[in-house]
Length: 474
Ligand code: HEM
Image 1 (cartoon, rainbow, N blue to C red):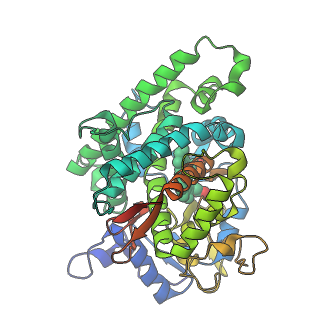
Image 2 (cartoon, protein in one colour; image 1 turned 90 degrees about the horizontal axis):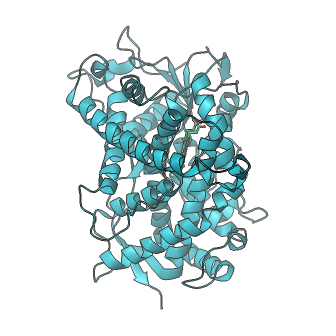
Image 3 (spheres, helix red, strand yellow; image 1 turned 120 degrees about the vertical axis):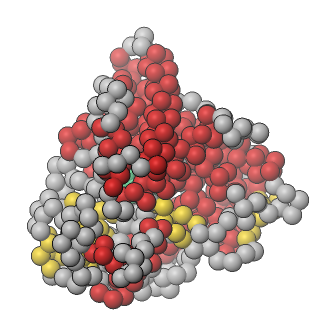
């Protein structure tokens, strides 16, 4: 299989050594893979220290071969930094939680999944997530300068909204992230800082020569401090919920909210703490940036923004009308806009598995134990799969529309696949539906600066400030 030259010990990492090559910049994962794709074709093999052979493919047929035949416990590469942290903190953790692998992953997943993926359970949060979006609109009005254009740090406002939204499920409480004048050392702001730091440091540490596995490096110390803070906060709120359900009758489980259900169905206190911390880790940087890109595409395609606004006004009603379940069920264009935004800019560059059996990908034998990656950030914009692939055309996702796309069903899997599919998918979608509806009921959104591209911090993030203008509708 083609790919960069591999040498013993360093694998393909020699390319990033001083003098011989260019230093590895992990935020450039996308560009590096694009270059590899141009050089080697649709599939290539690399080797990095500490990882098995890495096989990356942009062919949808290969993605199908990777994901279709799932084993009982499909494996995704775990974040080894998080793994080390949790092993070093036996007082807090008994397992790696839902981001780990094997039986301990399934133990959490099998209890959490019915609670998080059952539509009714998530739809019960429609009022709470609606209120959070209302608060976000009020906050936009509060912080908006006279020229309506948001300041360079607007992305942190998106983090506040995403944390408040995931917090209402994970911590069973309103954290108050959208309140005015939050101090930098408030619990909420510290949580946001801790998740951001964890994300960018995981990205950096995972792809470095792994000195941190043997030495206590300054960056590792910072990650431990951030993780300690998140864990201790998760412990506090999990304990509160445990106390609240102590005396509830067992047959009331179906009436309980998600966290209460998980605890009542037997997930231990420590496993629940790991799970809710994972929800924060997985649910802030993803939803906030995906939502930011959706707004960006709507500003760049004002005619699509207007079609969507007309759907909002007709299904939900004008400013102040709440989005009910019935209204949400009548909004195909909203769902199409989100799918289209995720096609152009998914949250992750791809989906990965450690293969547990030998595979044939693009005609090559790939032995079990390899790290196989379907790189949908490239497949999603390939001409082979999508007409006018770089254009924002939500209509391609609408059944029966003349522009309906005929792409391969595995070309883009923004929430992953199968047993390891994103467990927060329904929640994330509901969060984004609610916020998009409220924004379009209230504002025309514009953006008048350079095009926004992407950079990678484990997840894909915008590479420029989000100077959106929120202009009041008459
Ligand atoms: C637009 C927002 C989001 C996107 C695009 C997204 C995407 C993904 C993807 C691609 C995966 C890997 C799936 C796989 O390997 O097959 C994943 C896993 C996961 N996501 Fe999300 N996610 C989002 C929001 C959330 C939220 C809000 C939560 C909070 C509950 C969450 C929790 C998780 C968890 C816990 C996993 C690991 C599941 C497992 O391995 O069993 N995600 N997500």
